[in-house]
Image 1 (cartoon, rainbow, N blue to C red):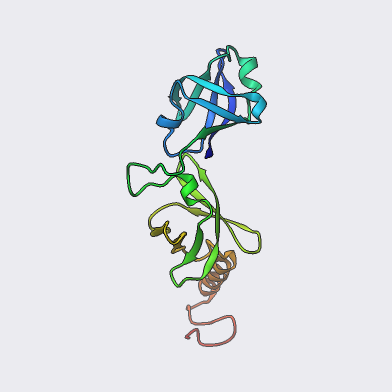
Image 2: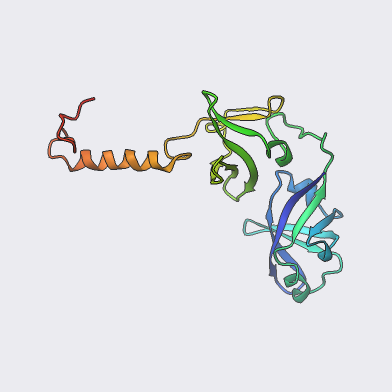
Length: 199
């Protein structure tokens, strides 16, 4: 199956290097020198990686047949696509390929459906699960164990334990409004509705 492993960004320098937005957990494998990648749009490729290095926290690549800045700029926003065996699994059992996660149901601990994993965003700081809600909205969920404690590929689902406001923004707004009202009360005992502040 084909997986997007990177998106080409700006040209870097004058020798055909480009910065890339990495979209794979294994850039050292998928974006190694010698790798031949398909492209979207197809007319831009295939591209063979000639060399790569990390510069100021960004991955820079150069491709065979892309000798200068002009040729590199023409590749901006092109997606790099690797052919991956769908049965292939990461060496670490705690790691997952994007294609294993996309399409899984995202549920809360009590089984309530949150939505379906639509995409994995690989950011410099952390990975995010892009979960599409039943109403079409998208929620960005940090892909960390505290929030995604369980992934069950056999059942095609993952469990979320989100903090208040992550899935439903209204929950965070209500909580902050209550906190603000409590801070405004002279002795902390006056509630906005005239009650004694107890529940």
